[in-house]
Length: 131
Image (cartoon, rainbow, N blue to C red; front, side):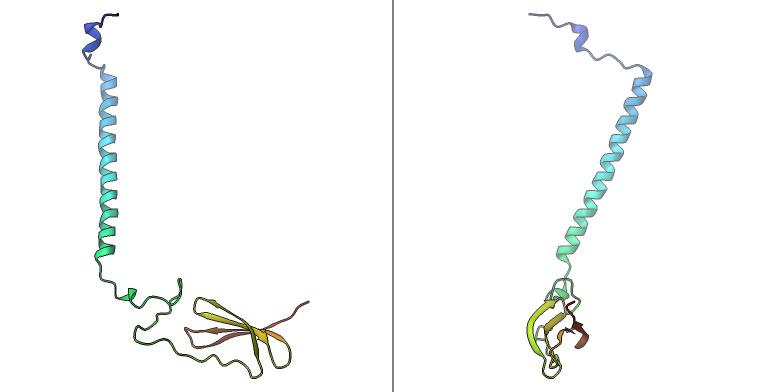
């Protein structure tokens, strides 16, 4: 077996240039740890604030995700979509607070009528032409 040299076990002092570099590295490490700690405390504080805050709007959440329409808790929203006389609905689709009625008018033309629930009226009447 090889012998362990006593000189290898003892730490030798660093030369002055390396000591400066070591001090800068220790200072940089302390600053980095401090910044990371402040960031972590900020995130934890925001989470605690979010979960402890009383939120009255959660009970009256939006009708559809991304919509600003709030549904009252005591009754549903009531409204009337007045479609033209003789309009035959073939398909209905919903996009947020908008309802799209696709069908045929009394004159046989194909139409897309869009009713917005938040304003309570028809906002668009599009004639669909197939060319």
